Image (cartoon, rainbow, N blue to C red; front, side, top):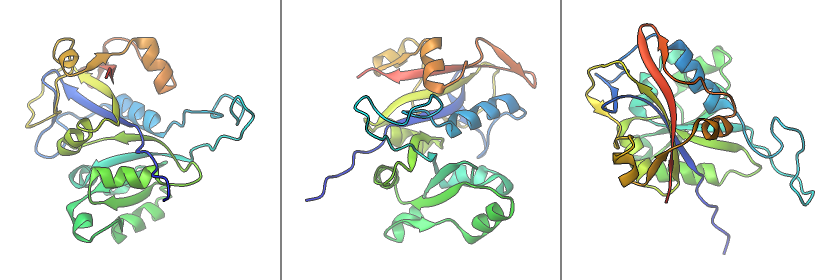
Length: 239
């Protein structure tokens, strides 16, 4: 009987208000956070692991370690459709879109022809796959041979975040905490603060821990952009 590949570890990446609001009317409640969006792109593209960026392609025993070729971003269909068509698929990452239509078809499906043609015309090198559920998408990613997939990021929306948080594979949340108030109608499923998060088995990482995992020196403290205040945090599961 063939061995079953383990599901890959999950990192949720999200921008949320103090009340954990993440959306309004199907889109982000704020605009103009170009530096924050650039951070999102760098983190979700960056390949971090054995033999990457630090020389050496083997382990201590001298064996060759397969290097991942791309990270993956997993999202629901509404999140996919909220991305302007000229920017999708998100380049340099494997885009996995969770959709009921893929479940109804009984398996995985390719991206729509319009999305594929637009990305090809713009030189976008992102790959797209549709899956019927989060677990199905992770089994696909975990089963890819040859070290194809690096890190796996869940990028929304609320239902996909909720499903991810119910899985033991969800190990961390990269949170952009928006300090400026915005009216929201969609919220991240758990409140990340020192009291509530601890009760749910989460802790805030130190700055050096975040820098080491992300792979860069993350900007410290309060950031101000387009009149909006925010700061970068990382939370890790402790169980």
